[in-house]
Structures are given as C-alpha cells and as structure tokens.
Amino acid sequence: MIPRELRYTEDHEWVRLEGDEARVGITHHAQQQLGDIVFVELPPRGKKVQRGERLATVESVKAVGEVFAPLSGEVVATNDALVGSPDLVNKDPYGQGWLCTLRVTAPGEADALLDAAGYEAFVQRSG
Image 1: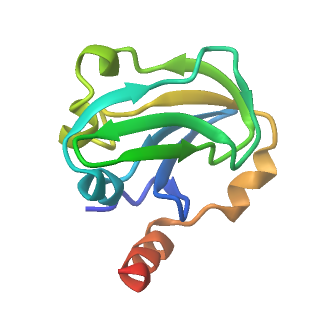
Image 2: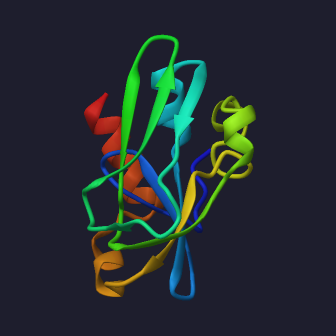
C-alpha cells in the first residue's frame, strides 16, 4: 500500500524525487483521515517555499488539511486536474492525485525524509 520508491514526511506528504525536482502529494493515510476531498488550493507556480512552510490546502467534507513543503524549492508545476476533480486525491493519491512539483533548492534536506518502511512504522506508532 505504501509505495517503496517514494519518500515521506511525518506530516503525511510523499515525495517522488526526479533529478532536481520533487513531485509532492499527500499519502493514502492522509486522504483516508480527511475523507472525501472537495477542494484543493494549489500553490501558484513560481512560489518559493522553505521546508515546513504551508504549500497547499486540502479541504474535505469533515476537515481542512494543510500540506507542508517537504523540501525547500520553487513550485514549477501544479496538478490543474485537481481544480475540477479534487477527488483524484482520494482515488489515486500516489498517481493522478499529486499536488505540485518543486525545483529543489536544498537537496540535502531529502536525507531527513522517511523511506517507506520508516513511514509505515511512524503511522503504526501514531495510531
């Protein structure tokens, strides 16, 4: 269930590293906790973020979730399909439900991300 090729944060974001870019989304666990997603506020292209800063907002029928930047960088792409179909985050969180792509400015930060086994253990510990 947890893709092995991705890296993860304890805030339930996933990262797919591709050279100097990182595609970002929220994990299956996060979307499950939120419930049916009805709106996604994506960051504007060109926005510069530091690791840990708010990157996007995901709204569901029962909660509003903040998505934090897992790495520092500049937003170079957003998943515009989510504007009309925010439920893609529920249906395919690791595929069509991605949120944005960052051009990473501090690659060493990736060392602090969890691998799949580490994230799985974290989710089990945190309930």
